[in-house]
Length: 203
Image 1 (cartoon, one colour):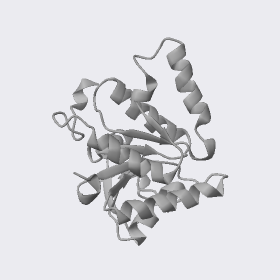
Image 2 (image 1 turned 135 degrees about the horizontal axis):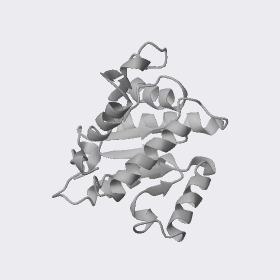
Image 3 (image 1 turned 45 degrees about the vertical axis):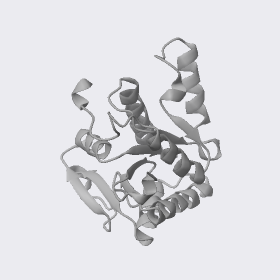
């Protein structure tokens, strides 16, 4: 089944709440949002209304798509949330990440800062521990994540990886590759285990 005919497919986007110094990032984030909406794929994200987070979510919404933001209560008083999205207010950051995880079929990491990096490392760690087998896509736009990819290679070469790092995440360089890679990887998931609702008590 083509996942894009399903209204139940949701992709979690981790990305920066700033625009960054490369103007291409905002353009590409908006293009990704447009494509998600046009294909009927829901967006799950951290609820921000600025930076790349705002660019993706605003684009999905402006093209008639579905957006679910997950934001901890202590951030609701700040003017960073996207008021147009369906917003889930949760008690803390840990609940936020778990909620985003449980509501998503795949993950895509766009350029971002320390928070984005932490989210990427956690979701990859969970995959290494077999907590889940959902696709994890690293959008290395204009070489932004080159140093992170080199670090992952260093971990493997240093003997601290439990297997090929490429089994944990897939590197892409364009918006089009994000869509096609998620489609391919979801189509090849083990239908017995499935992509949703793993047992987080394994961690």
